Image 1 (cartoon, rainbow, N blue to C red):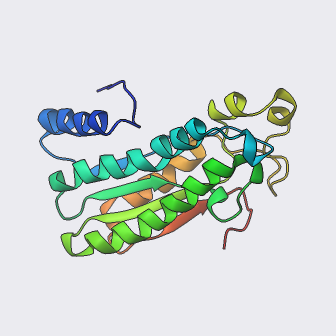
Image 2 (image 1 turned 90 degrees about the vertical axis):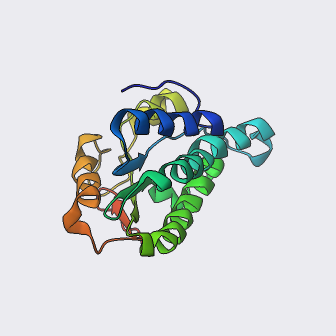
Image 3 (image 1 turned 90 degrees about the horizontal axis):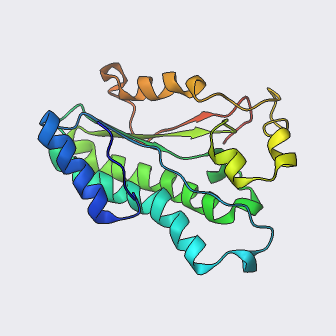
Length: 191
């Protein structure tokens, strides 16, 4: 089921959840994986609109989707949020993006505690460099060509290399894992 729209719009987030529940009757797993990032060399280059857009897509949408989905989740359900290595090792040229990724880690830890008695697990995956359409859309070609080279594995991840981490956090055998952030960073320490 594809539902196009702006995840920065709370009404759209509520509608996505309502349509999902109407079709499937409940929500077992919510994966929050939307992101917006733009590179800026100076804080003065970041417009108010750009700052708000980054927060709207990266953290506000996560809140709106979780808030709408939680009433339709039973014990054993899972919420998996996508953070980033930028939460702990912020790239200064991605100031807005990195700030939202830190907020996602705090949102995850707090929400996990809030939902513990309900039996809903909340965790985060914090990828390092991953080859997605966001990269060529955010960086100049010379940086795209070197993307991931500074990491110990000397390359970015392919999205499929993160899949098993999301599956592990979603599956019932991980019932004691909640409030965690799992780093998938190509051997770059995230402490």
